[in-house]
Image (cartoon, rainbow, N blue to C red; front, side):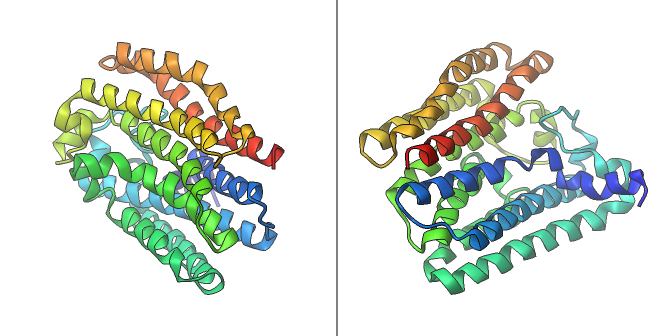
Length: 300
């Protein structure tokens, strides 16, 4: 396979961005381990495969829909937003991107069905909601400010962390719930901030997310509230005895979070100057739940 074909096939998967889901799975796994559940390595491997497949599906279907809507021809891609640019360069790969997204989704669904059989029907609400979000996000959810705002955090945070916990234990817990709130708030912020450079292009194809509906200033305020929510969830979970002392390692990211927020508020209208803070925001999304998971494993 030529390098050109590899780029065309793997581009819509956005491979460099596939770190977030495994980190969220790790947080759910750490939650199960901390409450004393024995980890089944085969099940853990299936969960990681399912998580990565889910993320590939989200990315590939988003690339396909953005190409079909014409959005890819209106955006100025950044390292963190605007898609991979694969399909505008290789329009002949349009159906390959769609096929990739649907096959990856199929793999995730099959793994979900396996866990429905071995763990029980109560996994279905999470799995069903996850499939709905994947299939409706780009075309429909991005046209509602609230749905667009919270669906990324629901998918990567609440559903991924609690779903991993349930797949490993066969039950839900408040520990997993409080742990899931951290990526819920942070991933919502990740997608919210990534919409800043694409605001005009998104509006041009009929999207109606938060900053289109209410402006960038409101977007920055919500970003700040969600940032506080992420770290407050760790503290509250610990004070309630639902998260261990080790989970407080996630608070080590506060010294990064504060200047990130200040930089976003200062440069929200200047995309080149905003880019470094978008990078820091990515680091917050990965390192905060990762540090929490490490701390939970250590103190289990």
